[in-house]
Image 1 (cartoon, rainbow, N blue to C red):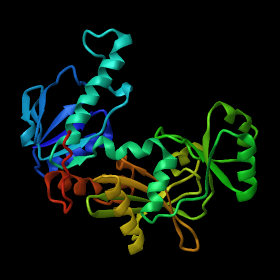
Image 2 (cartoon, rainbow, N blue to C red):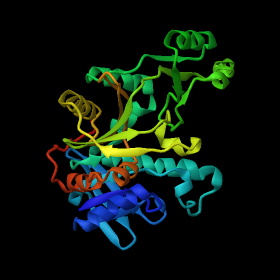
Image 3 (cartoon, rainbow, N blue to C red):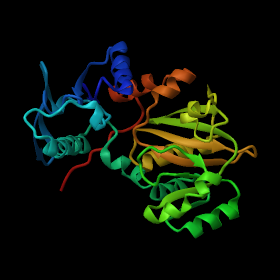
Image 4 (cartoon, one colour):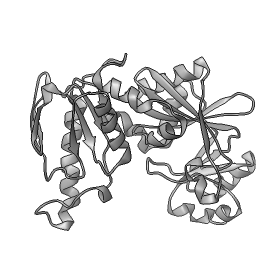
Length: 317
């Protein structure tokens, strides 16, 4: 039995459930929008890992019967208030409940998409960049600083520069233009990440087990995800990566212990490839819808055990 831990208010989770149903793969939905109100967990750790049950409205699932897990945690806005909990304690109680789920998923023997530990590097983009380079992927020249003078010098050295968040919190990537330069004095209040602008076309890669799905994105926007804010268009089409780039993408996904990953690349006009980041919980619906690539079908097969990847077991000491 496949366990989907997410919320139907989330369109990506909804697509995963729909694809599992279409392929007649049995699953249960642990609705995080209602968790832990309408769900229960009884679990203890033994030498072989966690043992126990997860229950939901009208169902009960033994942990030993779970053959694959897809988890996509929701933000606070996608969740119902906790029953009998004061507002000042509800957030802490929900965090405790989520931590319990993470601990169980971390130690299950089946494929888990994805374990929490695999996504930790996304909380620090500079650290993740080191891992990308270790896997053989190029990273643009990068500066992390809260020193306005250092930012000015980096801009002078590279001409065109973009800035973005250091953490896993989503931010809009923007060019360091005159208006942003005038605000560099505020860096003293919090560091930012600056990168030399890389010309060329964006390519979004999804690794699903040992499979690769690559989408070439054509847009004049610096951050094509928000092209509509600037009145710009976005076009997508499937593409084929050089073998060396494919292998590097698979290597970094394995290195981070991610069975499913979204990897942002760019190919320059000269044919050089750069990598910006790895997303451990990609919102792949946008790319599947616009490219026609069967990403969700491959993910369903992976959860069912039809992929060529091997599940890892993490056992607590």
